[in-house]
Length: 210
Image 1 (cartoon, rainbow, N blue to C red):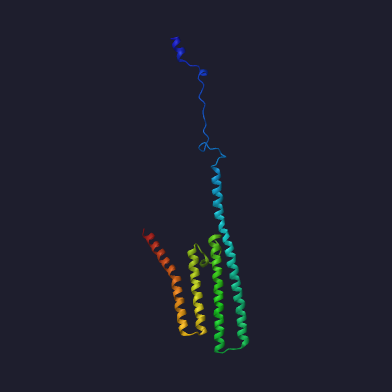
Image 2 (spheres, rainbow, N blue to C red):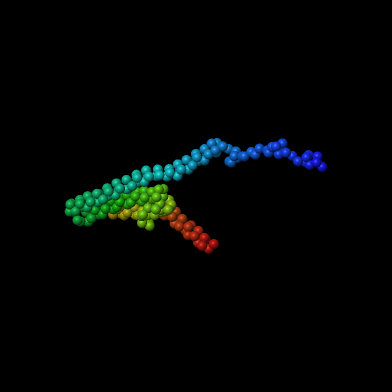
């Protein structure tokens, strides 16, 4: 019995514990391995693309400068035109007709300056600062909003141009041809907006029914 007990009892010193291997986290890759470098590179690329939108400030500054020049020129030209009209003293039908044509052409210049300003302001809102303190009709949330506003101003500009052509008193055939051409352009500009509004209205109605 004593021999059996001695044979079944093992000395702890004779059977050393197996070494425990600790696996490093991250699949055995060292912290300085190649895993962190692609992440850092992709982060730089993402940040670079996110900040590249500020390059649109160049276009915004150019448009605002052009709009300022057009509006300033239009204001000075209006003052000069009015001064010349009263200085000539030609208050007959011919003088009134010439004065009207000059003012209509100056209105074209003013509207073009307004178009440039709206485009510059819209690009700034879309790419840089969406929460500008501007009136509601100057708030743009997408390029479609900006395009719709521009189409409205361009249609007015075309109408004013046609009015100046009519006031100038060119031949009837030329007036009809120009009117047909302007009407075709207005329809071409307005049709996408009309179709888009109907599409959005249909989508909104379907969403409401569901």
